[in-house]
Length: 95
Image (cartoon, rainbow, N blue to C red; front, top):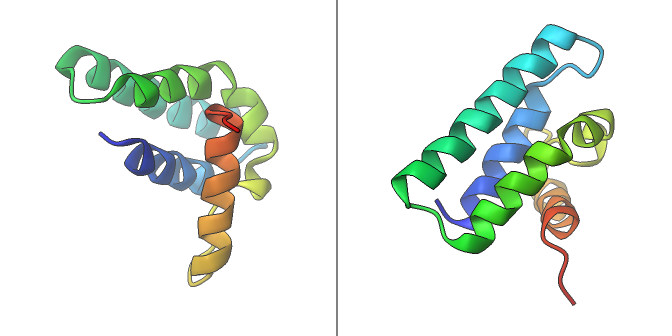
């Protein structure tokens, strides 16, 4: 899994999660954790992507609380791309 694919996947999770519903948050967190575990076990993700996955797991509650800043909106391609960039910068800061 590439970093771009992971960021897109994470954005989709954040688009589906209901920040006020603990069950919804738990389902999304489990999906994220399972994906990260599979990526590590398979060796099919580069170290930067794995690091982003670990960071996303650690920061998941914060991501959910600010989901509106990262979640995609159907048909808003440019805005969604900008939100993915913001999400990537949060998880993998670089200059």
